[in-house]
Length: 243
Image 1: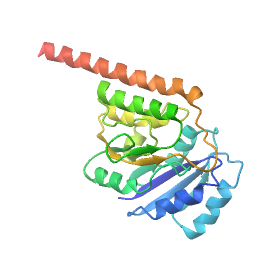
Image 2 (image 1 turned 90 degrees about the horizontal axis):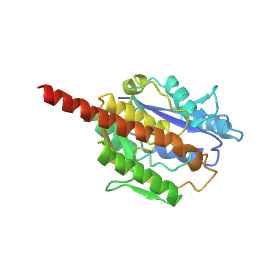
Image 3 (image 1 turned 90 degrees about the vertical axis):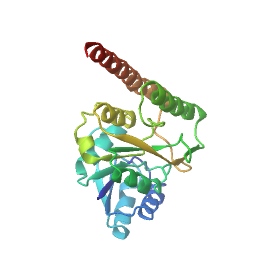
Image 4 (image 1 turned 120 degrees about the vertical axis):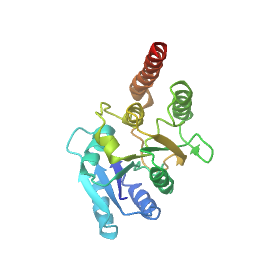
């Protein structure tokens, strides 16, 4: 199996070197690193070009569409041709060493593997307590109420079989795509699981995540999932009554 690592990057010149060296020192299978320069106003693209001389796996592409996380993800996906896809943030918050555990789960037959901060062995270190509570509540409640097989649905750090992503009609336009993709995959019947990962708040650069602006977008998928589960339970009940 070969892997495409998609790194959406907007003004991440201070973090890109650490992210790429961390990935290159961790991954054990053939891979490519697709750095999606998302309309950066700093030296992100220039730095990626310099790093590509040391790391031939780097493929720098510029997002030609609207600036934004979801569009960068979608464009990066169109450039990827390997069997496995993993999205990793360009701010050094994700632990690249978790990728090998994700690959192992794919080998066991799973289609989507979520990096989870909220199971044994995982952790969320630093960052806003409000954002932390929000992601924890979303993950835990959807695990118990909707039966979603991960405790950390909102985390971007996930691995997919490319065929899964190719089958999804993506609607999200921002960071909520991180929640949309595994939810749609789960309800389409793909096998989803999780592995523990440690997330650390960035210590360089500025985050583009705006909690107040994004909350309604995440809430939409949260309510959609709960309603979907409720409807499926009704349909199962009707089928049982007819049997």
